[in-house]
Image 1 (cartoon, rainbow, N blue to C red):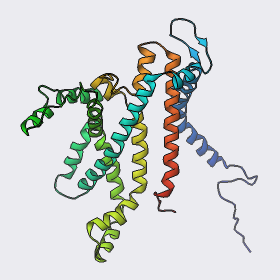
Image 2: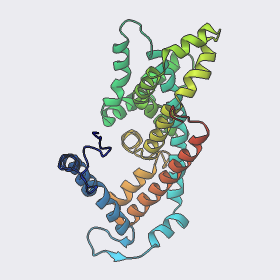
Image 3: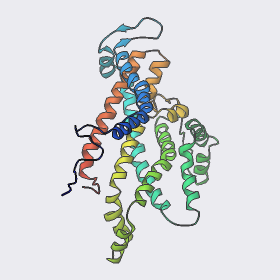
Image 4: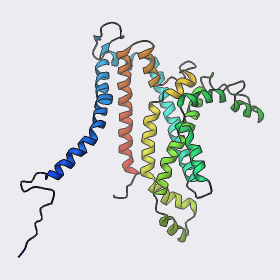
Length: 311
């Protein structure tokens, strides 16, 4: 009686890989090799290099001097400017992330329709994302101008006093936040739109037959099924907000009076304006620690409100 072997066709009798499986494995690693090399050369090595530099007193001209944890101790105990930029960055994150997530979700809901020309509307809202940050900041400098800016012109026409957006310590950071939310709106909208279109239509149809109105369907169907997408948008928005630099730098240069000076801008100033390379590297590592802890907290908290289909 003939028997059929249960051994996989790709394995050998000794339990190793067959020649075909071995060739496929090698080919897979060869395809991955450029990315692995790029990650090692442009990410891993610079990361470890900055940690070494953070232990040095180095101005790029004189020979570096090893100072151990002195940069970190000074940063955390005797640097009032760092505490200021830390607060500014937290202000920016708390201002941009909730507003950006909520507005982009509402925009995605509006764009998730079958009206005529919807693709054009989606493209229009995505244009700020692909626009250069410098060009966007220059445009908003004109919009925020106290004397002839378009925003203050509108305020005057409705009987309100003009706002000194970029010259007031109270209004400068809100001005940066408004601009940043506007620029990132299309990117988050596109992610939410993909999440909305992955929700099965028959769930909404069944709920409508059972008498659920649009608000109830949004609350009990759309939001729960959109939770993984929302979590992803939250994580990338928080990480991106902590690393804000170009928009704020071009719009305000950190002013007035350090009102919009952020952590990354402080790193740039310490490294390339004052040539305190070791101190700048220490600030970068502290920023990495903050972002890592915040992301870790988000990952732990998501277990309470994010549910995946395979669970």
